Length: 544
Image 1 (tube, one colour):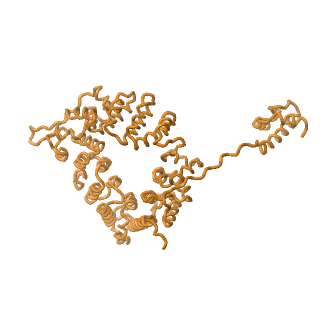
Image 2 (tube, one colour; image 1 turned 180 degrees about the vertical axis):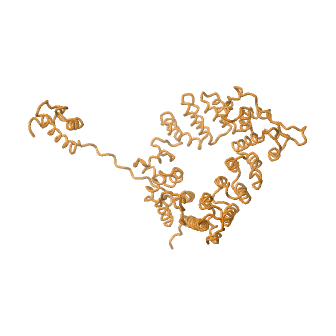
Image 3 (cartoon, rainbow, N blue to C red; image 1 turned 135 degrees about the vertical axis):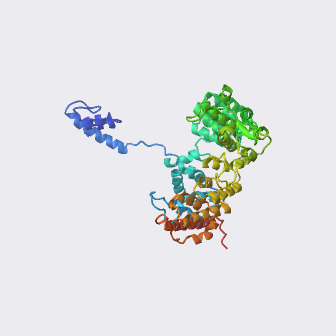
């Protein structure tokens, strides 16, 4: 290397980008750093680039070695039985094909069985096989509905892996204790430090976790910084109080009724109305009772309604939205909000000591029945009142397919969710026996899994009737998919008679008979597979 080259090279320790720019533009237009203009500039550029290249390849200064990676934590839970571990590998290896407009075939959808497998494995307290963790995290990354069960099953090693792979960072946010600064919930100083210094997502996670463990402590923590939080943050924090909501929260929620944010005020009012003994519930009950009465002067006792004529400031403070949506009358809008927020215990005393069933059966004058009953539906769901839900649902065999207040399948599903699992299944079974499956999909979605025997029999019988009637088969694919996941596996042997291809009625959809046979074959195969999965998760007998 020439003396000039050495001089230029020594003066260009950190100018790689400038050298590249000079090479691209030419030394006539851009003189390299440290070089003189003129014919020699191009040679100086090449010499400097050669020296810089050597530096970039071999010029790393010695440094302290990085800290050695700590081993993954131990998982103290018992290992999976060998057959269950093989089954998990098969479930994780299955990838759903590209969706098309055609048929699914007779093969079970393994990925749809993974959530049930995870639930069963978690209920038995097994640890995930280490070699399955990457595929398990990949599956949870692609399906958010899998994450809670998958991360619980994966255990502490999932968090260890998630800190090494950015693709799995969701585990650090979703799993309890996953954040790098998440403290032990028994560490008051760590909790306070994270609450004051943490990111918003970390604070929401902390508040939710603390609320489930110590509702009062979580509320006190929120009260300390409430006045300085942003409106959108206050709304999210307030929503976390739904878990463990109780009378002790009333004082704080009453103060939140005066919040600057309309959304915060509305959420606080909703939470207070879910506490039937709260002062807000009493105020709303008094307002609603003033609007609804029984007229005993008629031939048949009849409910009469006098909706509010105005929405005053006190009503707005208690969560009533003054402006009605497009297409809704203001007075009916205000009435619905008052009745929805009023304690359901208001009405027996106000309406002649009648039971919920008797109240719902009363005629309502002047076309107010739909509005009044719909508001009672929302109140029953909010207050988790099973007695009112039964009254509003009515008999499942009713010609209108439900009570007069249940104006939609979604409302019926919400009312059913307030009942215990057995009663819920019995009602939906009765609904299907009377009305078939065409409107039952949403109702089936709120029933406990596996379906109780009467419900399972009702679904299978209705599917069989639809097949024999030559019904268009693809319209039942959603219910058939639910049956694959929710029928008790013990029902598989009872379904064997449905596997044959039936004779097609003349007015049946072309190919419908073979579709039905194929769908029932997939159903039976899936049920047997689910039964095998559960058997494989049974503890292994020790070798003799």
